[in-house]
Image (cartoon, rainbow, N blue to C red; front, side):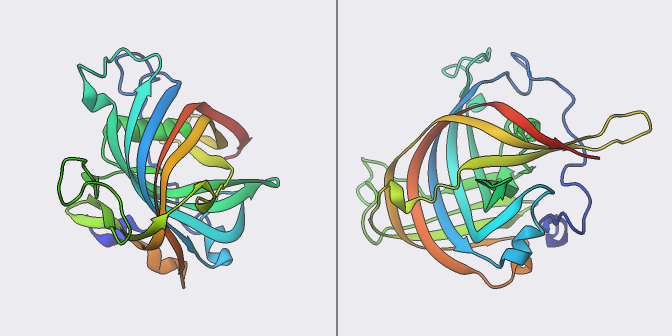
Length: 271
């Protein structure tokens, strides 16, 4: 897959992100099990700023860009379906995945939040679940990041001057990568609280008589908490970043996060 096929989606000049969605409704034992879904994740992230006019073109109708602050991250996620049929001890593949994404600070009718124009995951069930809840997910063969281990003499745990990295690859090439150098232990205030998480549920018609879905949504998150924050320097690259103009790398971070998602609330509908 060449770089031209990985260009970031622009709402003012391109067709829909998702050309087709999975037809199966979430069900026990299905590709996507029913929610609520519970998450625990380890993140490496970079905050950066970009030109507001450029960012606005990447947002769906109804969202307004904020001050230009964005977040890019790579993470490893443990996820459980509260009503799923899969026992995590017997089928751990259904509970673990990697994710790489960037999001834009924005608002809906004055309510601040973040929208993710591009998100890569390495499990098909996470891909489909994301589409159901309004995330613009794409499939990556690999999402990987630096890890520590308490019994590894060289990489026991995070420390000052630790250098971390993560990336996603698709079609045999990297499509997303970032690097972070930790400088100090951080605190929750080092993480930008964007507010709500917005998404777009978009499933186009493929023939006459079908109903097209085009819904701006707010992901229903709760139980949110963070820990083990570190702060430092960072830089990020992803396919299409050149279209965003001049970027200012603000801060690199490492942290852990937990949250739950019950679904996605419809805010607006359109053609």
